Amino acid sequence: MTLDMLPLGQKGMITNVGGKGALRCRLLDMGLIPKTTVQVEKIAPLGDPIELRVRGYSLSLRKEDARNIEVEVQEP
Image 1 (tube, rainbow, N blue to C red):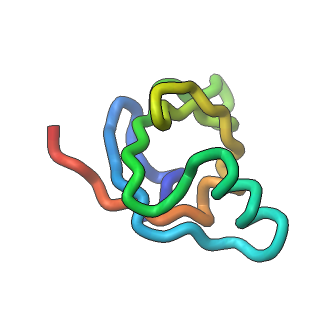
Image 2 (tube, rainbow, N blue to C red):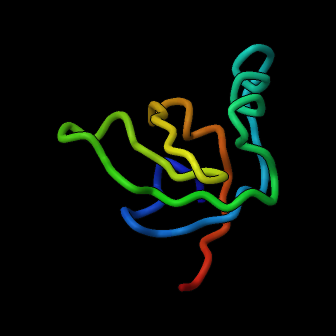
Image 3 (cartoon, rainbow, N blue to C red):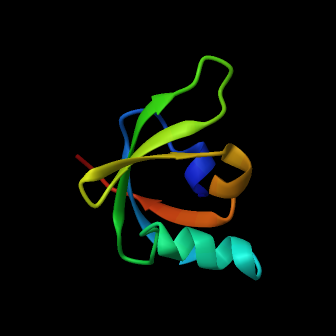
């Protein structure tokens, strides 16, 4: 599943970061690298952007960009 489909409050582990060129580099620079745990904390009223908890900090990400990140759902 991709990160934009992860439900609110759910944790997932990043398995792959897609995208090309500058987009992929930007996602990796923000700490969204494989084997990192992420959690969806908030979703904007209109559904975009989403707020994630990554490596102890909050990160807002557009759903369009989140579609480039594959995650594996983690059980609580």
